[in-house]
Image 1: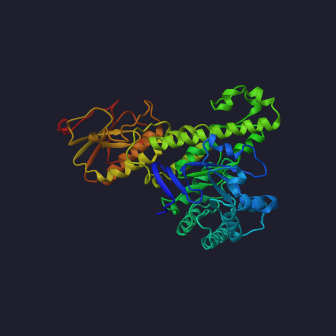
Image 2: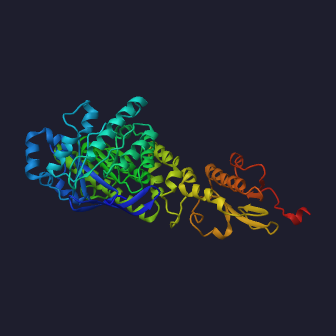
Image 3: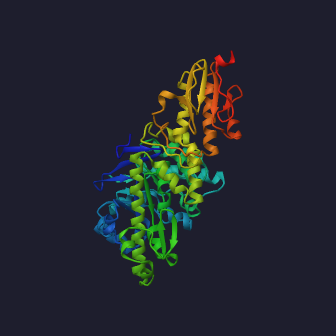
Length: 497
């Protein structure tokens, strides 16, 4: 077990936890957002970050190291005084510059020693951030190099500075899994999923989801996971549900520089806004027209402050959703705001079996909000657990009233399928579902019927349904008699006699 990370609450793959950062002598509550600070271009003074809720930030040690004046000041003053920030500080190594420019003038041993020297609390070795969609041979070769550097990082004396172990592998989920397992086997501390920025820039949230899911399969449950470069609030809920605990991004500042205004649904251009759709201090005290007339520097700072407010507000909302057990309801709401986040949510649900293992067995409520709800881990768990039940004789599975002509009478409810009536008040069978169920919900229920019939071949089953669509009934095996309650008369053994 890694003693720097403690999990306090879970829902789906999401966790609320405590990351203990010994060198800073602070404990950071996760999920946590790390604003990126470029020491040469300060948009919002890091000394003010606690106003927004930031407990930790990230800066680039390679930028500092290459600037003689900055490096001298960092060595003399220490990183915390240099930036004016009392919380924890993570430093990147220059790997981003490596991905952008092809080479950098440092190596893992040198940069880790420098990060330690200037007072970083969490350092990073020089990994190889392999871009998406490269050929497999390149992805494997660069992954081997990253793994060698992680092993080298273990040998560097960094005192109580925590060290990142980046998880690479491009767009190959099996390589991400292998990379996660290798990184977890080291004695390093935090596990960033790397090289996701190009995918996020292109809104390829489904590929991001597959990369994170692959990495999570290789990592242990107690591994704190950082999604490098994930700073847009529209995808925080999805990323947390996938199992990410830390995020960093310069989006709050970079977007402000281009007059872009962040929301949980996407990005707006300041020029297009007549009203600010937000209740943060910036938006309640200013009108878009007034902000547009400001000098460039003042306008940029105000937009950056709004972008921080909306980001940290969403992160707090996500944390509460984890504690309340309705994280996937929040993910679903956010996913349907943009087609690409919906792609990401569907990719998460492709791995519902993986995330079912960490999903609590009992919560307050299950809200069926769309066809995607039929694929949630709770539905899969119910279907898998049908093997534990013991129906015997002639069993009626019905959406309607009980019928005494059968040996047993079970309820059947989309999307879960069949269950003994005694479980009707047990989560998730207390779900709130729409009166007009969609095809996917009926199909999921029919798959449950098929699972029950397959697990119990000696029992005889009759499904009494309320006009389920034909393509859903196609999932019901032929040996299960089907009756449409709107058309057929329900019969039992006495009637047949």
